[in-house]
Length: 87
Image (tube, rainbow, N blue to C red; front, side, top):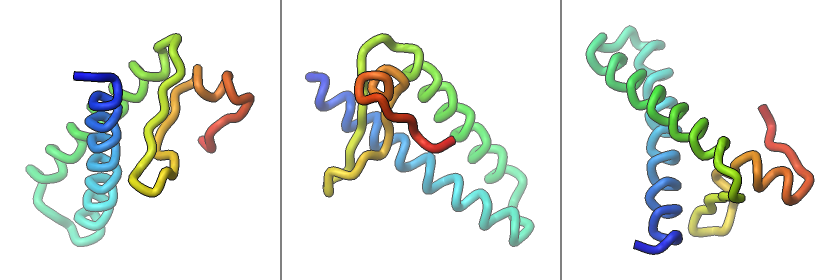
C-alpha cells in the first residue's frame, strides 16, 4: 500500500468517527441505548488515540476529502505552513 492509500484510510476513519460523534450526541438527546453509547465512546477514544499518534509524527500529514477540503492535519503540517487548526 502506498502512503496515499493509508491517508485515504485514515481520512475515512476520521470522517466516520466525526459522524459517529454526531450520532452519539443525537442518541444522548433521545436517551438512547447504553450499549450503543459505549461503542460510540470507544470509537471516539480510538479516534483521539489516532489523532494523538499522528500529531506526534515528525512528518507533515494531511487528509483531504474528494473536494480537496482539509479534514485533518498534524502538528508538523501546521508548523510547515505556519498555521494552526481551531481547537
